[in-house]
Length: 351
Image (cartoon, rainbow, N blue to C red; front, side, top):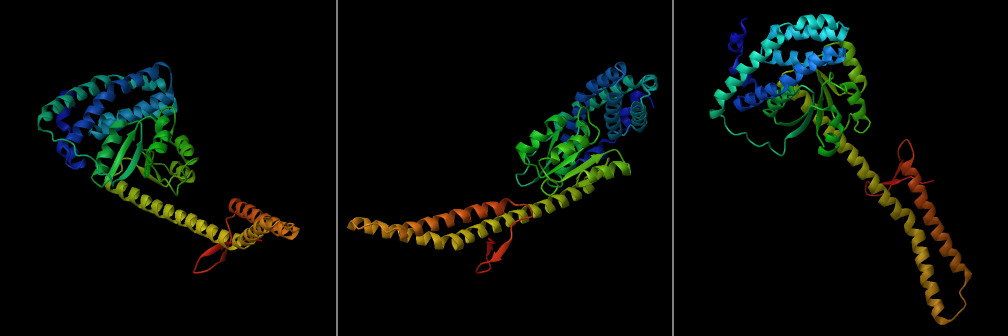
């Protein structure tokens, strides 16, 4: 196809429809493509010069996704071939296959930006996100496809944040408290599997659902991710309908598990209070009574009988013993055992 006519093959109506009819969102996606294209192309050429097979693979993978998104399947196939060459280490073959790729993709970029400029006057202002939306973090170095997915998920009630730097992802999760994570596998510096392991050191799968969203459609990769406690695996390009259904299901399940965990903690707290009330109240009463008796005798000038000191000491020692036993039981592995108390309440079982 003549490069000059490539723009005519883009179905802008279909792309806008996929984004929920939001034409401003499509303009945003094209501007992101424009902003990233030069650095991606430079990165690809730099990786070839430095004989960096992984860099060639990652850059080609991202450019393949960009071309596929806008419907340039022929160019997507060529970048897919470069990706495979990078994976196999055939850098000479990759260099030979660059040929006129640069000219073609920058002509496409120029024509896309001309379309953007023609649309800007008619764009509506973006509506603010609702505070009650499910909050998702999308971790993917491919900002174009990530932003596109975020915009599509917005139509289904999700508020998505895109993080293109995997090194910043964990601190982002700690500070923002997301409901779920969409994680790509092929990324520079830190790959998805490594990041998955790192996140799971702090957030288990019952609290933070992590769904892998990757172009790798291989059973070994899927099994490895699930073994490393990813909650689910979606193959790109995943439809927003499928992604939203999976995300919502995992988020609802996580919220239920968090609720159940909180109820267990509340039950343990109630049992702790019941135990203190039942086990400590008696020796505490004896100790207080003994102290009052000693106080009364001291005012009369009589000799203080040792038996009261003994009872007070014995009662206080019993209280200290109970407190230590409760602390030990609440820290032991295998959980805490309970006895029935009253009114359907439980009490920590002491020896």
